[in-house]
Image 1 (cartoon, rainbow, N blue to C red):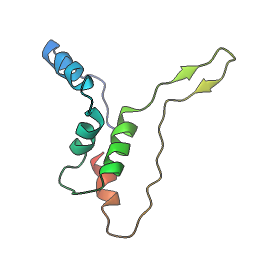
Image 2: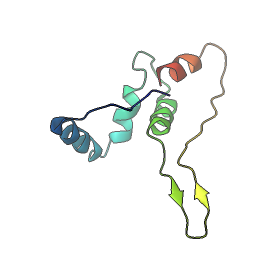
Image 3: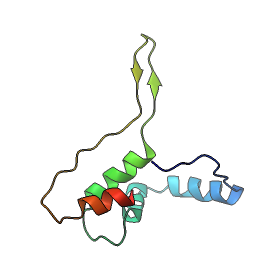
Image 4: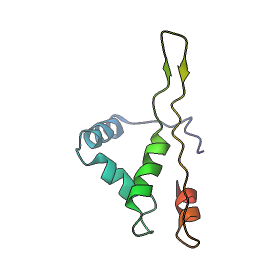
Length: 89
């Protein structure tokens, strides 16, 4: 994964992120931003965007720990941009 430590967000950055987060089509916007040079594969791009954002880690009252990791299995024919999509994410 990419190291996100040391990122500094300006107040304008935070405002822009919050504005994007309120959009009803945010998943489509994020999906289109994943490897835009590869056409098609909209569902896979959305899945990769969700994986990059990850889920929410939870500790339940009974002591169970649920990791927030989202895992995907990508299977397909040769030469269908699987490696390029994964590298870009």
